[in-house]
View 1 (cartoon, rainbow, N blue to C red):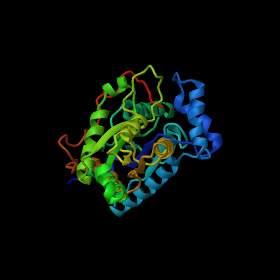
View 2: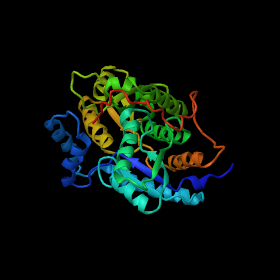
View 3: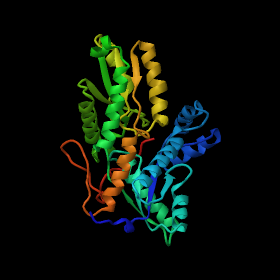
View 4: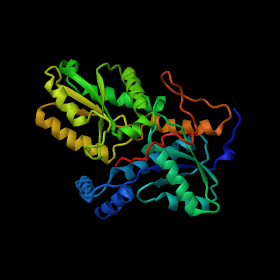
Length: 343
């Protein structure tokens, strides 16, 4: 392999962002919802989710831990690239991070987005935010090139399968034949979903994780819907599905695997650990929730492998399944759709 490390001089981890104090919650949500026709009462209802955790989203802390693990992994493999961090909706904000990168002499960076799948809100919107921030920063601002999607990378699939097996082991052996695995992901407006590969990628990842874990009884459901009732969104909803499983007398236990997320952030700890668990407790359905990949060593090494792909002329591009590795660069019209946005 010929080394092209001189063509990149940094890594940027780009994420959604989250508040870290009660006073942050409303300004954070105003950033998220700016330009969108979302009723004020809906925003206040979402704010209560954060207030249950004293206004602190777990996401920022998890990103700090992931960056520390990635820095150690890069150092271990003699990859001399500093790791920067930016958020779309809360500090450290993208524009401020780009200014710091520029002032540090960074000219070309590789971007790792904390989303495994293709969609407007999970990819295209990040790319648009980068371009807007670059225009604001102006002369000398670094170029940021996104790393490829990793939904079918063994470094994502294998840790998820490991966590799924661990969760299944917590079900009493005599009840495992009555256990259903439920993969969850953030719902999207149906129109947005029709313009990207989000659903197909989720199905492939769920099938791959199930295959590696040796699981045959599983479903895909969606959570965290926020649109008006008249707007079609991806379903079924996780709550409705859990109630349907309870009506099946053969189902005694459910293992919920948040396949659509890489860390235990607010939509996992509230929508699943609070709302879904409360529902399961009320109907008498035993629920176990799997861990997300977080800072699993194999996931961290996957990020390093994605970086190495772009540093070498003849890269090793790992993937599982029949579709092969995703492309490095998105087409100009990829995932644009109607630019509807989920909250």
